[in-house]
Image (cartoon, rainbow, N blue to C red; front, top):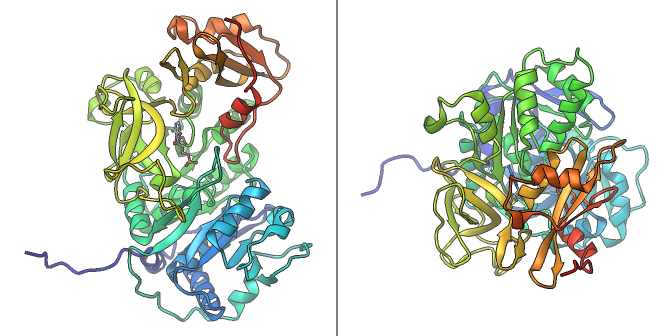
Length: 542
Ligand code: AMP
C-alpha cells in the first residue's frame, strides 16, 4: 500500500522561495574585496537569482550545463547559488587558491560554459587564460574591474546581465535527482575529483545541518560562513540558512582577525563556521589586547582539520565562546559527525568535556558509519582499536564526476573516507590519521597526527609534520619536521620530551628536523604528499 502524501520534489529553488516569502526581514550582508559593505535580503537574492536564470536561459544555458565561479563569500555568489541551480544548470564552484594547472584541469574536466569571476580574482585568471577549455563561451565579471586581462573569450558584466531582465519567472519543476552543484576535492594526491551533488542530497543535508547539535539555526540567528563558498558549498550554510530564514553575513576575502571581529560585533553575528587556522589566529589576536571581547559571544562550528584543544579551551574559558567540533568531507556534502554533548556525557564537568572535544564526534542521522581494520573486520568500539572509516547515506557520493570507477567506492555500496579512526563507547570517532599518511613501522601503524598534536603542545612549536622515512630494518620510521615560533630556539630533545610517556616507545620519532616552513595545500592543510616527495631519499641509519 502506498502512502497518500503529496509528492513534491526536493529542489534548491524551494529553499530560496521559502526564505524570500517568509523571511523578508532577515538581512544578507556582503563585504567585497575592497571592504565595502552592501545589504540585501532573501527576497533581494531571489530577485537577482531569477534575473540571472533568465539571462542564462537567454544565452542558451539548459539544464545540466555547468556554470563555474571563481569567487569569495559574497551576495552575488549567493545569487549564483540559487539562480544557476534553480534553473536546472549546475553550479561549479572553483577554489581560486588552487594552482593554475589545477584550475585549468578542473574547468576542462567540468566543461564549463560560463565562468563568473570576482574582480579581485582576475589575476588568477590571467595565469590560466591560455588553458581555458574550448567550450567556455564567456567570462562574467561579478562587479566592476579596474583592469581586465586580455582573454580569448567574450567578457560580460553580471550587473549588465541582471539589468536586462525583470525576474518575473517561476522556478521550473525539476527532477530532484538532477545535479545541482559540482565541487572538486582538493587533490592532495593526483588531480582533483569532482563531486556532483543533487537537489535532493543538498536539501536533505541542509535539513540535517540546521538541527540543534549541528548548526542549531533559528530565524533570529545571524550566521557568518567563514568557510569558503567554493569549498563544499560553505558546508551547506547558504542552503541551511534559507530553511530557517537565518540572516547571513558574507565576509568576502578579508578573513584577517580584525576584519572578522569587526563583523562579529557590527553585524551581531551569533554563529560562525570555519577551519581551525582561522580561529587560532582570531584567538591570538583577541589575546593581544584586553579590550578585545565579544559583546555577545557567538557559537562556532569548527572542522576541516583536527581542532587543537588549547583553541577550544581558550575560546570557551576566556571568551565564553562554545565550539562544536565537526568532521566532514567534500564527498559527504560535507557534514558527517559532530561532537556536541549527548545523553552519555551530559553530566561531564567542563574539564572532561574539553578534553573530549578533540574527538570528531558521532554520526548525524543520514550518515551511516562502518569502521574496518586491515583484515576487513569491524573494530571494537573501545576508543583504542583503529581502522578505516566508511560511510553511506543520501548525501554521500556514489561515484566521482567523469570517472567510471574509483577504489574509494566499495562493491557493497560504501564510500571509503581514507580516514583512520577509533570509535569509543559513546559512538564518537577520533581521527588518528589519513590512511595514506600512517607510518608503517615493522608492519604496525603509527598515527602521524598524534605525534604532530603532541609536538604542538611544546610552547615553541608553531607547526609540526610527522612523515615516514625509509629505514633499513623497520621499512618506515617517523621523522618529525618542526617550524619554530619566531624568536625561539627549542632543542630536539625538549620536543621529544613532550611526547614521551604519551605514546608507546616505538612511536617516538627517530629524528626531529627544523625547517623554515611546511608546504600547505590550497585548503590550508599540511601537504603530506609533497613532504614525502621532498624527503624521499632521506634514510635513517639502522
Ligand atoms: P575536504 O574534502 O577537503 O573537506 O577534506 C576532507 C578531509 O578533511 C577528511 O577526510 C579528513 O581527513 C579531514 N577532516 C575534516 N574534518 C576534520 C576534523 N574535524 N578533524 C580532522 N580531520 C578532518
